[in-house]
Image (cartoon, rainbow, N blue to C red; front, side):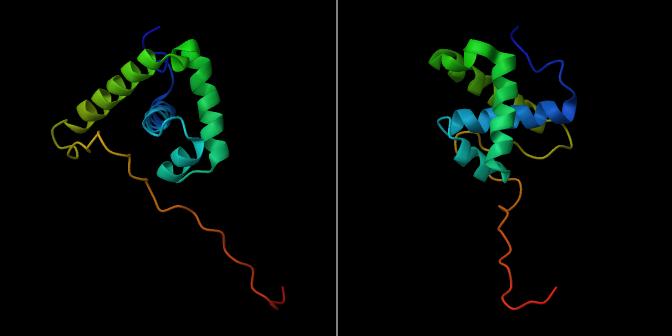
Length: 113
């Protein structure tokens, strides 16, 4: 199956594709992907389990990972180059985060609740 995400519903398919592209660009770093996407590392691990189930051994091959990265970047460019759509994002550098990373709120000392 050349496109195992084809049958996944659109919002989930985009999240999985974005996660996979970040994972490939980061050298397979869950922590870096979580920071780039502004999600919890456990979210990245969950998505990667789904992707590994869909892609199987293809994610273990250097050649297949390279081909997947090129294909995902091409899809990203094609999708953003539609009339009236936003300009294509650069694909050679890191993927910028979608939103600022979450920061824990420190507990206040002496606060009565």
